[in-house]
Image 1 (cartoon, helix red, strand yellow):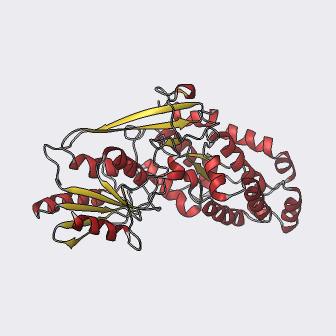
Image 2 (cartoon, rainbow, N blue to C red):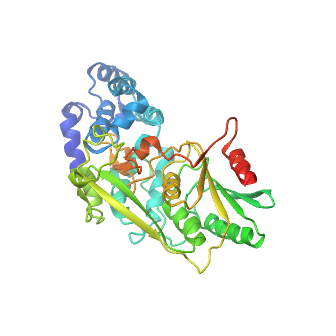
Image 3 (cartoon, rainbow, N blue to C red):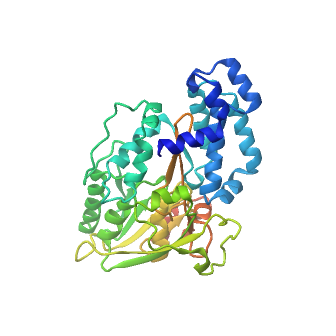
Length: 410
């Protein structure tokens, strides 16, 4: 984020702060914190209010957030009272981290805590602009001097972009055989990690060599990661012909959102919302911020003459499936690539690029949000409804138990 914009925003929000305080937010005295609690003018309150201002102007899932968290006015007020009691920047950081949890992952809403900052910054630095068009714009937030100082990262050297990245954050996949004819692969995340990617390819080859007829992908704890993992290491190696699917994404092309999308060349094929086809379950009330939409059709070509695995593929899903794992689930639902077994997913996998970020004007912490409204095929909100499985869990059964049962019944 440009410092001039940040300083202007801070001035508009907090004349009192800029003219009446000489120390940093972390140096506020107990008396000034008590006064701020009464007047609501502390830099911490202003940053908290700034979060809501930015969301109301740029975040298209406010309706989903209200249905998830209850009365938003009371929700906002109750947390503002807690923020107003913060006396130090560390207290603000810890309270905002807790606040982030209570947003319940709606639309990727997330206060970037000190524990997570390096992960996000390193991840984006590890991508090249050729691989990911948004990377340069997103890094303007994460490489901002004030942001780096807040997160104590002024001397941190980020990684260079790599064509074969491995991640210290990736949990390893694991393989087991419930029966001789079934391979079960546990995929805890879609974090891009070359060793995991190679292990997936090796698993398909092993299953094919052993004559296994059923491959079960356990995604029940998979909260997302990188779409390229499922595209390049699950779908493409296991298809024999091109496979396509289409998704509709509604967009609030606001000044702030545009500042990320336009430099990345993402707005070339968008259409006015007035041209959106009719969908039976589309909430007109929800989409008041959305003024454009994008229809995206993705086609995947086989990576070899024959699929590495030629049997039946099943994916175990549930409420923890989110973001890029939800994207894979939606793909399976639309194409039939794999049979979905389990419970409805957590959603928010039909998106327009990556979530966006903004810097808080006083403390210089970073906040994240999804800037698009993805539609299921019936027009319902994917971030709220997720994807329905093809086969629901039987009474008292886990997704795996249900999957094993339907395989045995065939």
